[in-house]
Image (cartoon, rainbow, N blue to C red; front, top):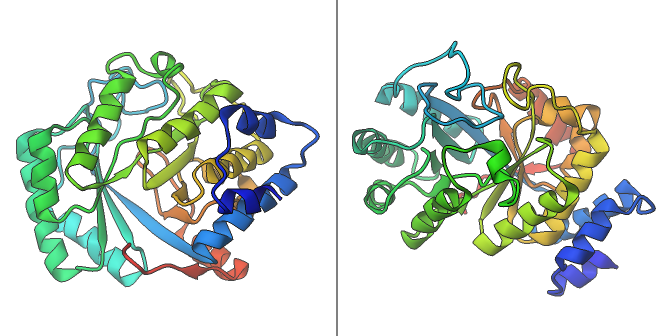
Length: 321
């Protein structure tokens, strides 16, 4: 049994992982069952909840082909960094709704030192009131001094997605490099901030690219891996892409679990429109989800997520670790 071998310490090779992903004779639900055995071994029936606060919107010089906030798009919703009260109110909501991780997200290439100070001082206040709440900052490309300031303020985790494979990166964005992204993750790791890094599937990448992404995150040793499924935004480079099916999404999640067995695999943006009625099945591979809205697209109402988890017999994980 594949799951048993992985639990005992066997690691998939890229060749084996690709063959599992692309084998039309391997039923998707058999593959998902293997992923579930691994997920159950490490996480039981527990699910981590995460929520995003869009702390700064638009005003971005990057040309990411999936993003409605890129410099190539007309900005409909743009504003500078929100005030501390707005950020704190999101933390209060998380603390009263069993949401363990609060993600403070900024648009743009990277933060200024003033923006980092604003967020850091606000996080210090949040940590005094809600010490159990995990704070994840997602601010873009950052440097060593900014990482140190975030760490001392109490930021637990930093999200910076690789988004796609190194091979396909230049098809997605040209205003920064794949190495720029990895470098930011490494800076955060060096400052003892938990690394969160994930992907967006459905942008025209190949099967090989998808497997490469999963192995790249294994090499980076990301603690949390958000798997986004492209929710096409009209007018963007990938606005007309439509190459995902619910079963393909399940296979992607299954392989990410089997390649990164001990990590937090999170279903992120686009799950509602791509998994559709199969969303509950995705929790057999993933052990974490976002509730509420995403950075540029809307999620389903929170109560539907809580009801889904209740119907599945899953338990919300309130542990910060």
